[in-house]
Length: 173
Ligand code: SF4
Ligand code: SF4
Image 1 (cartoon, rainbow, N blue to C red):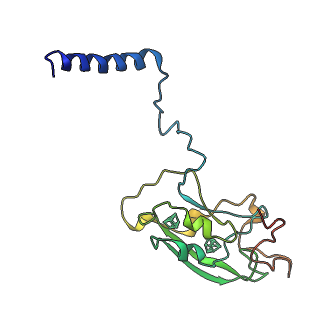
Image 2 (tube, rainbow, N blue to C red):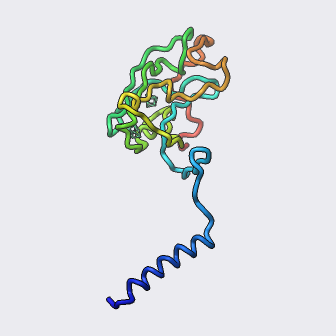
Image 3 (cartoon, helix red, strand yellow):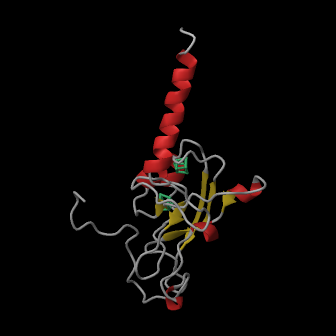
């Protein structure tokens, strides 16, 4: 190495800094007021989805818990009735919890779900100050109801919501 080589390398580095300062657009986001858009396949905090009629998509089958490699999901199911209906079909998730400290955001739960109830959304704002707070219960995960009348549980017409899994119009979907 020549005696001037470090100076040349330093000049190149400073030149690069000057070039980006003068000609490149700033990429600083004023978080939290301004949030960076996530990539289309980003996997963030889970959301438990509802149908358009407000019923919960989750039927408490526990397939997501079985598929989870981190053992992060806990599900307990109970029976639906037409007087007190949460989801279509026989059962709903009476308890649904995800331990966000265990989760590795692999998306296996999403793939395993037969009703597309659990979805990894675009929320990356996860923070807690103790381990208990990292366990997100169903109330935190469940999507808001479209209108107040569509809340769950609710009374529905008898015999209408018999199928747990929606009929597929095109099996290739
Ligand atoms: S994203 Fe992966 S690790 Fe996290 S709850 Fe789902 S299956 Fe488990
Ligand atoms: S989220 Fe899906 S896979 Fe998990 S219990 Fe509910 S319906 Fe079953």
